[in-house]
Length: 80
Image (tube, rainbow, N blue to C red):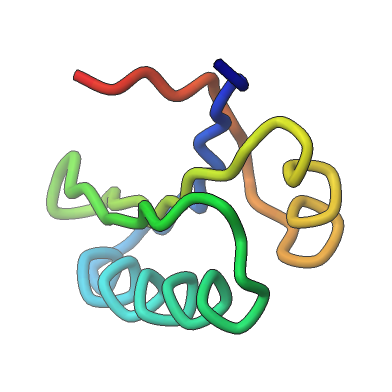
């Protein structure tokens, strides 16, 4: 099984939640246009001043997507 990578964009400030939700829509559009293997996007709210948007890609796709979209960070994705 190929390793999956979760690419993460952090948003901070009073508009973080809305910005993360909006950014996720663009990530989903990107997945569809580029026809990437995975179809996982999402957003999480950690506090009223910190939210994230994320997408999951395969290890093989990670470098291409990272160079195109410039995520703030990444981590190995494990399904729960």
